[in-house]
Image 1 (tube, rainbow, N blue to C red):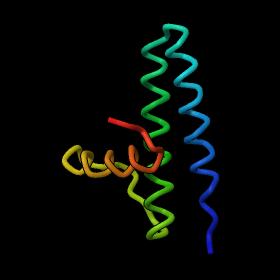
Image 2: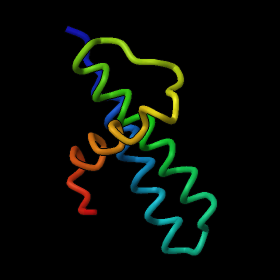
Image 3: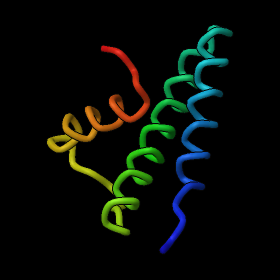
Image 4: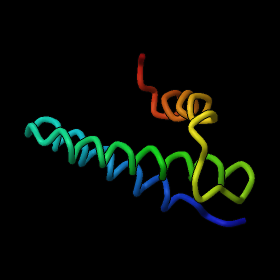
Length: 77
């Protein structure tokens, strides 16, 4: 079985960096890091389930994937 944990680890690093940047008032860079974290976590979740993931995603499918992301990190909405 393929180990995709590197995607999750990288996503967590981007998320941690985003929080630090946000606290420093670097909102644009924080938003960029959140986006990268989201993409990597999404790829991790998809790869873990089906061993494949899309390079890009249409915005219409984003809401469902966002729910998966939020739930997987335990973020309250």
